[in-house]
Image (cartoon, rainbow, N blue to C red; front, top):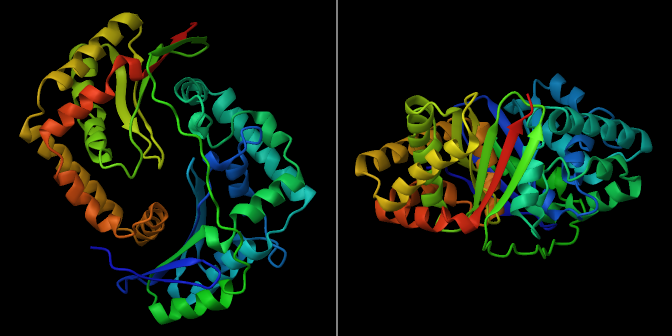
Length: 412
């Protein structure tokens, strides 16, 4: 059980406090309710670009990292299709340094043509290195465009096209910042060797005077139900043939999420999973195979991907995979196998909760979902999943008309 307190400032900033006096450290986590799904289709990659710009300094603090390092701290950030998160960990006696730094860049991020040009180049190089020039780097660009037709999940957080970031103007990024990087669209979590009165005082002192901003009203287009299979064949200079197949599944707040998550573990969650045992070890058709999903807020994709053993025909590998999916559609998962993946899930949740930084991040994320206490109740929902429910979801999800298949052929 993760205990926490919460309050809200007059400008709408939601604040959560998790006291843990077993550590000398403190974590300050600021999560903004903005991700790649909020971008204009003609200006993608901005949420990720901002992750870089936020470390470029504010009007009062030219270098974000230096004061934090002098206070014994470290920091990082990440962007997803749904959110952007910034976090810092430092000795608890120096926690005010983190409040000062986070509040100052929320209040007065330094915008200049020079800083924008520097970060544009950094992101552009990242795009080229990881998504254009790297073998298989464009897989998810292609899969997202294949699977999504209207929802903004059809582009990755790095952006749909390199030109969108390359052509970003100072006005573009200022407009994005003042729309989304406001207290009313942010969640502050402070965890570790802190007290509630202390955090209330520091939150009001450093964040209380920042203008609230307009509350975001989303009008994200809903992806229509897929009614026919989609297939894309790609030929590229890669070492091995590779196979990817995605099915539309449920969003993070859907009660069917838990059965879907356990299905991915049964099928492809490591060396003891069904697909690995059958298709890698026994039949030796794939050199590796996995099944996963992203846990997105809006309806997600469940994906099976694997690289084929040299010489194996794509059709043969695909047929063998379909045989394994047919088994889980037609037969109930045995209680022993189901309990095994439930135990693994419980262990993963417990391991996540060991770190103060992870607890802070989870508090922010569940708050963003609308129910912070979910982090204390989700295990019960996993434990409640039955074999009958798993079989039902396997039949619904693994419907060929709901599938998107990418055959990635090696030209070598």
